[in-house]
Figure 1 (spheres, rainbow, N blue to C red):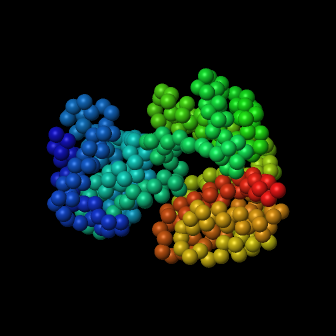
Figure 2 (figure 1 turned 90 degrees about the vertical axis):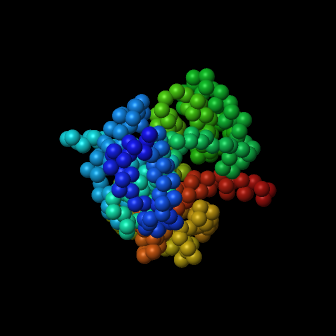
Figure 3 (figure 1 turned 45 degrees about the vertical axis):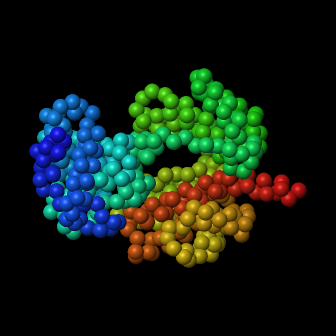
Length: 388
């Protein structure tokens, strides 16, 4: 039985943890403890690809614990290092075995269960409970590989709707036609772009890329191969499509920022992912951001003082549209970065939010602002057409 295996690994014998409400410390409760141990045992068994016997499962469990103990401080008050190693894995070194990457196999709650179980093997009285939202935040803010996305566990393709040329919505008939071409083996991006634009001639660059992504996703999902390979293939295709649809030369050289950042691309903008950043949240210095000072001041005014953090996606979109109304001639990338910088300063000043959450808030806000402004020309054109 798996319980015997984990006792041999030195876990169940010393276990003193339980699942409690968010932010609670570990506590003693026999019934909750038994249920928690059972869940953890099943997770470890589930992730062992070669456990055809109790002997193999015993070795797997012991190696996992040994590797984690040698790689991270399991008794640290904050569990983020442990979460990250469970997500992305760690290489073997010396006689220490490798830690598998669990991100593509386990969802956020399961990663939290596994982390709490390992920490519960220690004298865990005052250690912080690992929660699913902590795992989700870390996935969003650290460089977890493609196979580490939640989509690797559930390959969830977008659903499109609306009429051709409508704001922000790829034409479903055009997407279906593209999907048929892709299923038939067509992979030439220019051919696919021209085919979609023939069905939806008023579509802007962002809508065209979204259409190609929506068309290719079910084709990739139905193909053979591990989830992480399919996720990587879809992302490669989307980046190649964006490179074709948007002009290939950027108007300005932009340094790699510690937070999500907008880069000019023709008459639109693209998102640049943040570089890996440990420690404190770092907001771009005004003199290095490239944002005109008057636009930066306007963004601060538009953003104001949010009633609560994080700002919702709807509020972020509204702020982006308001700024473009107030400063209609602003370049889209500069407008996006002005708002991102202003929001970063607000979040950074908060003393009641954990650092990893601060980074997630800023990057989520920035992504929403960039997505909104990518669609801004199409939205304005549609609004003008309705007035006629």
